[in-house]
Length: 80
Image (cartoon, rainbow, N blue to C red; front, top):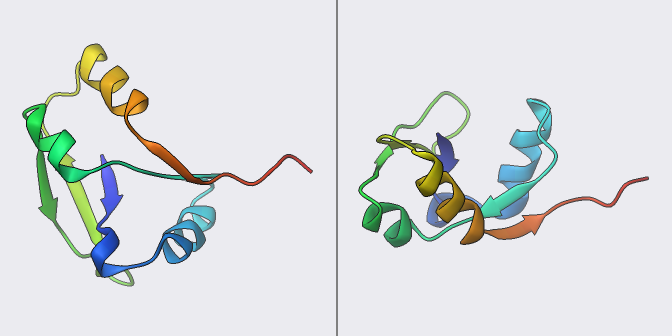
């Protein structure tokens, strides 16, 4: 799972990058919650995005549901 580390970017910058690849929203989740589920957050900068990281580990249905239920919607534009 590809993520941005908030301390290295802004929500608005993440949204701008997400729109370029066809995504419509930005959500956030505390890394501590991800780690408590046995996943690993690894900082892996890519060209044009120093804040890029990946979440490694098996994302079972129960973990995916936990992540979805514990994320916060940061930017989700209204339908036009």
